[in-house]
Length: 352
Image 1 (tube, rainbow, N blue to C red):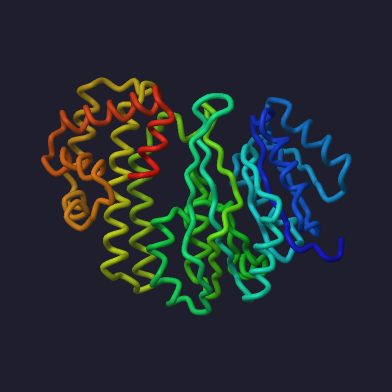
Image 2: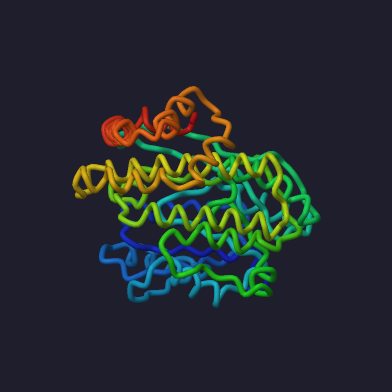
């Protein structure tokens, strides 16, 4: 194709139950001038074969088979081959509304945007057919200068618009000019997006929602115990501080958002320790929590944050008291709700 408007990139690993729906949602797009790079990252199931079957029927679909190297390497390999005017990244267990690429592409062309950000849905399934839907979207805006975008970025962070790669359309020339690729690390999405927005100038935000992020699989990364979660969250907090310092954009709004984000994720790190898959002794868990809450930044963030709900106001009390027993008990309650009542957990999380 000589006129490829969008290059779609999707890594595939252990998603044989879901990948067909993801591909079908791209085939159903009203915008048809695309190429689709699917990277089979050494998947041990039939995912790669399913993708090959689609590629045999549509020349716009290209399947790359490689030994398992992780999603970042898979995406980067496809980025090296992409020829589209814009890039779009998709996860293989999600799906997209049919007007997504068309409408985002036309916004990009209308505003000469280097980045288009759209809203999305989080569909959390609590059985095979029923789910809780959480809608995430930012305020419509067109930014032609970086400093204007920096001033309002706190609101986009608050609405979950600047963490994942799949609610965005990226100008490929911008990505290539800045030599941007996904870092070979656990949870690579966020650092990649931060690298994109670091020196961006022209950004368009739409409140239209297109992408369906599916929380359904018990074996998914979001449901697992992660031994290094706390260290990763500390690293992410450093990234947040660094980008605001790079932008020279610290103000009351950004400081409050970063503080609240830090405490919310600290609570998540404690819940990670009380996850039933965590085999650490109770004594070790107490020692780790005590170490976490002893840091000066915890007190600073608790003072700076403004909880948005009564539930969060209650949840931060044990942290203000520095009561390790109550903190671990709270984490255990969260873990129990998370594993035993997915519907309630998703509802509470959406309204925190």
